[in-house]
Amino acid sequence: MQLLDFPFPRFSFKLDSFEHASMFLHLAIFAGFTLSAEISQSSDILSGVSGILAAFVFGQELFLLHFHSTDHVGLEGHYHWLLQLVVFVSLLAALAATSFPKSFPAALVLSISVVFQGCWFMNMGFMLWFPDFVPEGCVMKSPSIDDMHGAVTCGSLAAELRAMALANLQFSWILAGILLFTGCVCLKLAGKCTPRNQSTEYEQLHSRGVPVAIDGFKQADP
Image (cartoon, rainbow, N blue to C red):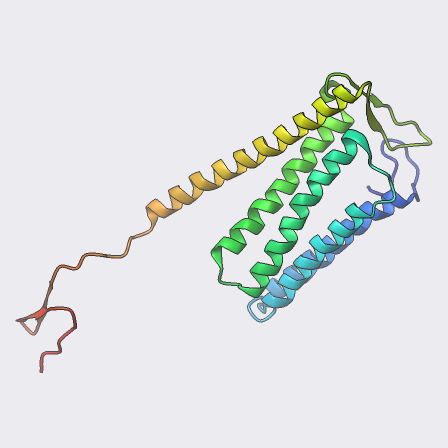
């Protein structure tokens, strides 16, 4: 779909279309390799390779976003800059999860950042491509057949600053919602786990009907 000018039935060979398609290409390579490793039951052996491929997915995504052929300026540029922050965190978390595969915090941060990316992509789609959601004081330039790339422009500096502040609030609110959901899920799952017995009271064992008291160290009854 990145190479098609939807809804116009013709191919688009513009640089930004190839850049977007390249992001999904690396994701497809990672997904295909991971799926093949699962099918061949060699995911444990190749877990490090999967982690490296995941890190490259976020690395090239950050690279293409930062050096995008389309000059994102103004409000649109601010949304893309916030997106780069999330992708950078995903890259660091992927490297940490690969280096420390048994680290729960690293895996949790990676999962949160990936969900955050998806939510932020959807938020950008509404705020930058739907006229009804464009901030007050700004207008969206409707894309034409020759130019599918739309842009949001603000009538004044005050309107642009207000729209950027709104984007910052959306960034914070979306993250807060994800963290709230994550915290609730963790508390729910933690309640189902059997806690370790932290009591220091003496335990009474019975070996062949003979009670054996344990005080600090286990004693074996001969």
